[in-house]
Length: 235
Image (cartoon, rainbow, N blue to C red; front, side):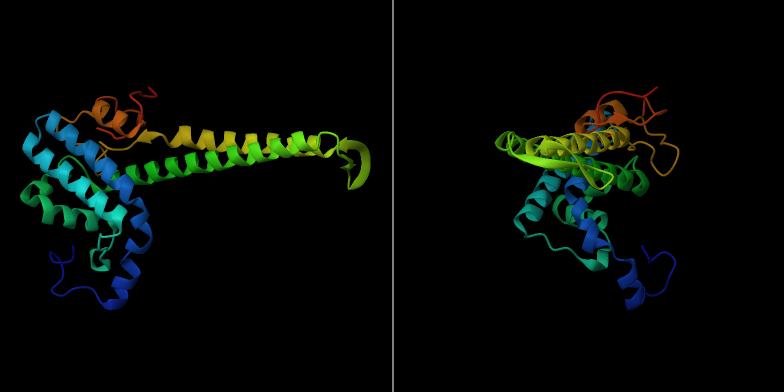
């Protein structure tokens, strides 16, 4: 990244400031998923040869297995998860790896990774809330006849059961789940295909990539590429 403009590499302090791999390595699964969908689409559209796509997909699978097994070596010199995966893919797939970035920019790649990660986080939180609701329901049933004072304005008011009190929290957590569900629906649009800013001249197929990442196609890009997002446009 530095070779085209500078005679020497960055100072150690700059490398320390600039490297994000220590935290964005959490995006590895999403980065691989997005790249798999993109590579498959490129081959389906005849933009890259199918044998190159197959080599890329096999390489990405191998990288995913290495990360899952703890064998992948994350390098701070490569700055972020995207360069770490691309560098390893080049070692595995050779020249074919360089074709993965066809019709894709780091901009739409990173935006897609972040949306996929945040969507998964919303789903994890929803499952945790559901388990918490069930625990409160169990307590509500066990204490249906346990009497306690109800409070209003910080003063004892009507007598209620502890079970009834627990059910109030079940309802509160339901509203919290609804908020996370709303956030998930809003972010569940795939930016792939926007490229650096305003699209690409390659004949990509965003309707093919979006369902592979279970998300909608971003508004205004109905005919152009995406990844795990539903086959749907808001238009």
